[in-house]
Length: 321
Image 1 (cartoon, rainbow, N blue to C red):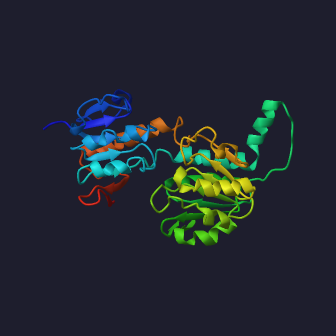
Image 2: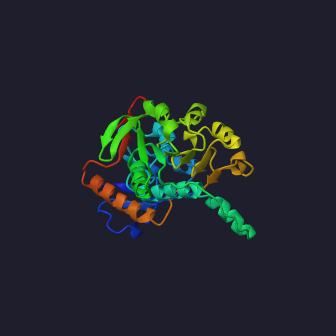
Image 3: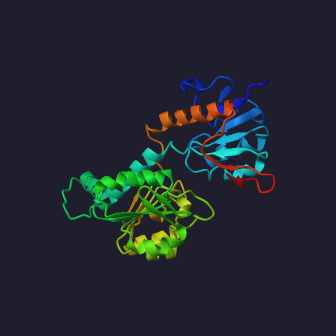
């Protein structure tokens, strides 16, 4: 029996504990493929590579059984699903990015509320300027997108003595920390929030979820934090609120992305921008390796895979998991 071929974006010799059996090949988006894509059974998508790189082998993956991302979102591979055979399982990297993304969300909240960008600019000029700034303590925080990352964000908010954390996801459920509200209840929750954190995946439902109506329902002076995906927010609508001074924002992701020089978001008042750095930290590699070892062990042993988002179907290219 021919050994299954696995494409890895991390050199296989650097992942101690990979199961024996597969033929592991390294490809992290280089111009040349490591072998014929038609023989690849398990495609691990290169991390933080451009869309055209990620999608380039997909029309040729005629034998692929699993597509595994190393990102929490799978929107970057969705356009390529139509080219895959039926029955391919698409898996995300749940468990890899929670710590790093939640850390950054908290960093952006604190930096924005406490005026850190202004301090940095003053330091560059050698100026000492005090002032009164809001604290995170006693604030109402709304987390929109309460999956594993949203829960990790709440874990880090609680020690800061916030008044309340409200949780919103696609559908209602109950957790140990309290109820999760469905998206349909967003309009009634937004006016109460001092800080709104976006950690939802990008889907057709969430694209431009944060539109003019959403923003208009936020209270005066509220902070919008986006660690999800740029297109979750209508940039034009957000710019209008920022330029009016009514809202502030902290954005790790933007639309467009990368944000081009001269884009009005760069100079908008009350906005802090980080260049999509929620995931790529020192915490990424060890967690990514553990995920790959676990998933490939399951694959080799023909056990159910974790983190299955969908399975490709014969008609529309995908069915829900």
